[in-house]
Image 1 (cartoon, helix red, strand yellow):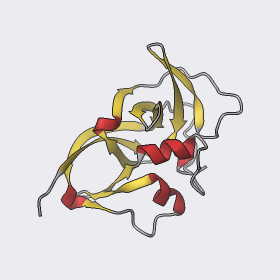
Image 2 (cartoon, rainbow, N blue to C red):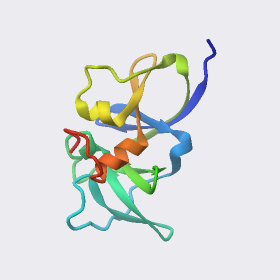
Image 3 (cartoon, rainbow, N blue to C red):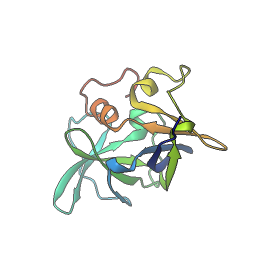
Length: 153
């Protein structure tokens, strides 16, 4: 069996490591000024201006049912290309880029709730923890209100 390598941009939410395939990442930025969106989806924190391109900023904490970050904690932006749009994923901190083999990858465990089952592509077993791999297309679709995953508000 041949082991294939996948590269991930990693980030942290609530102290837990997550990753997205690096080929889906457009850029990573520090906190950006946001314009609120009246009547927007609950996961949409606002709109940011990236060199003239208006991009929705989705708070992954809200998508995953995690507690809100404190007012003095500024989120980082992982700007990703989803199926039909570019969006910014708001995360607590940026990690490193990891090259991981298919031999450490597993499906999402059955013990993960329905929100995780709907939004995660799987997990990588690392030496001391699990890296949860976010399915960018499904997460963005759910956050924008297009078939929102149950419990992922």
